[in-house]
Image (cartoon, rainbow, N blue to C red; front, side, top):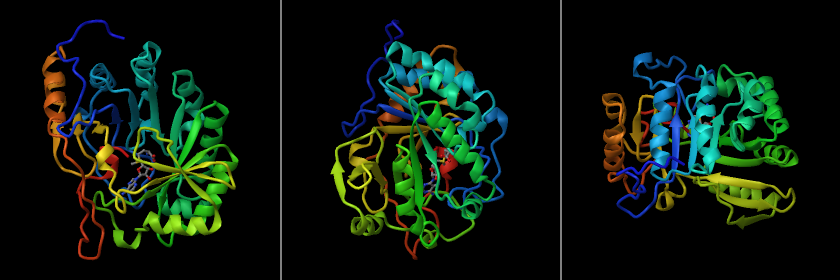
Length: 340
Ligand code: SAM
């Protein structure tokens, strides 16, 4: 660990007594897919000068680690399409080696994993989340618009072969992949992978109507209970998922339910966008600019002061609503900006 004594070594505790120990960093807003619930097809992306360089991403991440962040997740957009992303992974891995960081991980769509899985494992990444909503190639193309299922499956195989623990994230979509939830449980658990189901969140303008996609996980869980024995377990990964063990498969199944069950009381997370904007809550507009203090001086004092100030504004929680009266997204910001 960095031995220099910093006046800003104070841990990050918000006004509600929650310690912030988990930073999610969106390293790019770009993606090689256009998932229908995430992005519009004709997304416009940010100009390069606004995007933090890999060195800046390292510097700001390291400042958070100095303040007690123990878990860091790279996300996006698609993190693995950022040019030279492995340089950042490699440089952040020094914090794993020193023990300052407990976990360095990422969320990916899997399209580039065949190329990168072994390197990720080599740099101390132990677990990764891979998003996969369907194993039907035609449906996969419809949901992702641009994605190629075979490439993703190859990526998953590469991750497993590299010894990475894989968790599959599946967004539950009404009338789209509902029927695939049981086969997906069986497929994941048969390969030693955890599965987490996610409710669609009303983030960003997309081309369709969100009420058409929303499938409450309370309903999914009730249906699964007719088929399997679900035992609640205390397993936590530092994120918002609540887990059950499925007796018949022996595997773990997580539920992320921002709409049917608010999980803010135990929130330990903040999110940094690729432009250096810090969101203290996924579901609120309030944010802090860390790019100006980062670029404004070589030392980290102003940066640490801005981080402290931001954490003092972390809100108690979010309030997502999807119903027919609220056709507009709860937030204009897309998930690809804040990072999933
Ligand atoms: N490209 C990477 C990936 O596909 O995992 C990382 C970024 S992506 C925004 C992260 C996760 O957010 C994915 O699992 C995606 O399915 C999910 N996601 C995107 N928009 C969402 C929404 N409106 N509601 C729920 N989940 C969403």
